[in-house]
Length: 103
Image (cartoon, rainbow, N blue to C red):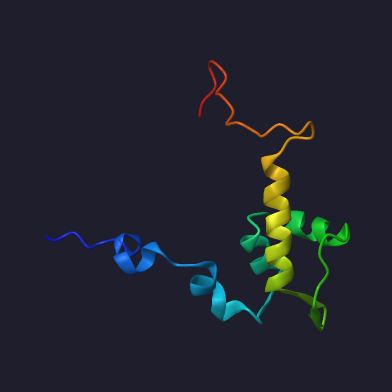
């Protein structure tokens, strides 16, 4: 039985840029569920983010807000930057497991 190579092991995939992977989504809009998944957060958390005004829908179809990929990408960069730095300016380190806790 031969082992199938993983897609990321092929030489063509090694030097892909963001545009190579997501370029076809440049003018697309995402629903709330798709946007939450893209931002790696729950749907209720994403709705709170919208209510706080951190992102606004670019379009509304009926009662469904749609969010542009450019706005989502900017918010994702901002959230990742905020997650990487603590309030006192020190970068976060991985937490150590407490003795007796299950990991």
